[in-house]
Image (cartoon, rainbow, N blue to C red):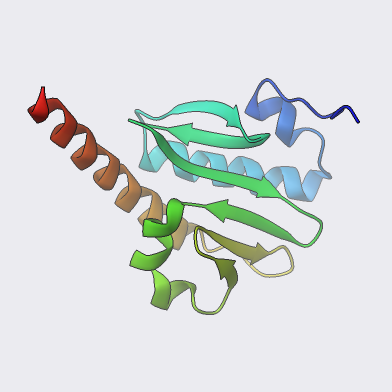
Length: 127
């Protein structure tokens, strides 16, 4: 079966959702951009993705929640703050019927930027 939803940009991804979800996704995107101004946008795993020296974070909209994927390290580092949300090793679900924790998301993205920069510095020192 062919996947009919092949997105080439985050704009294309966002526009398929109802307006209220589009607003959340646009705000989420803005928060990520502000927290990681040097990150590049792309679509990976059919999800909006930001990359900076490797994948930084992904996000996706679902029927009842926004999935946020800051890698297992991003989840572990904020386990206490995220404890009220459903999640897995590398993901967390923010319900659409509750306010989005944009400040927390900003902190997680900032953490991931520092982590990826540190990894990149480590790699460049090995050369």
